[in-house]
Length: 553
Image (cartoon, rainbow, N blue to C red; front, side):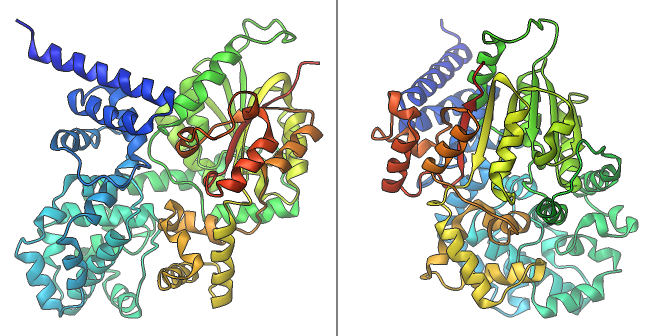
């Protein structure tokens, strides 16, 4: 007799194999379906979890997930090594298809006692006790406008109720785990939700009330609160506060790897010191598949490399930000020597803390500028520089500097904004300037509200971008102090000016699924990609991500 557990494991493995094969064929609909089947049948298998989550990050439009899949995703929430950001899409779809959810949002127009009675009645227990909702709010950035409206309403009600009555709302007492998740979300997203004047006044009144500690954490950074408050925080919120304090303490100890003497670099450094970007909790899911082929290729050194069998490959992450790529690279290539630098100490401190969690002792971090990369005093076999050159006064100077320290035969991965894809963002930036909203938390919250208030305006399209939902990311999106954008033709000219060979794009799933995209020899023709993007203007929304090589002399 066949063992049922073995049969289920075999079916899960077969579904996983079918999903990966479908990815290779570019059939992402089949791959998505089979990845969920693999997860449902083999929920404890790491590969099944990662593949399913990588699809759930961007897939929308499904009506409901099967119970077995939902249960498996709940299991994923307990794994601290998994990036739970894909669950934000699941929660968004869940909320969008729940007919009672809009009743919750509409209810915040009622008198406070009616709102309190509604929460106390248990009618919305399905939402307040939903494990995926709580997990997403605790460890990922919400991307649902409906959920943001609900969170803003819950927060406001709980604060004003406590301030006016001197006692906490049932939302905080009976649903403390949901209240903690709200506080974690507010801190993760850097407080992007609207705050009215009466809320600010109430907050000032409760600032020193220990019974309001959790409420205050929904409005202000936990690391800024009095230590006596911290002792009252639930476990996860207290741990988050300790992490933020550790990051702050690390900033001053980071070494200088290169000088920062360019005026624009100093301006950009100040920006990311205030708004470190991007926030992350665990290793990125897609990067494993994207990097492995190049790492495997680099493992077989091309002709012309010195005979350094005992020396590790040297990787540089130039402009590493908060370090997700650097940490992912170090985890994928355990024998490589990884150096990572950035202009921002705040970003680097976050990177170093995460590196200690996932790859302790593996990465050399320091403060530095791409323009002075030669001061790092080394050659590198692989350089990654994503989302950096387009924030420099002269991207051409930055690329020339990086090329100068790339070993002949080495590879470089670059990420650059697309001029075509950034047009809606320029419209939003112009709209924000026209309305007079200025840089700073209050101005950014006002700008978000202004963009949401006009759904028929062309600028509204940015409100569906993930960066809209975090104040740090929103600053990067709309308030960035320096930005350039490119076309494939401009990339071709820049690479040729530095003697670099184009090796191809890391394509988004929409392009991979399009059989009309440039393929074969045309896939290496940037002019062909230039024409393709003209016909498909939204294809590179998340930057051009591409590889190039420095030829062996």
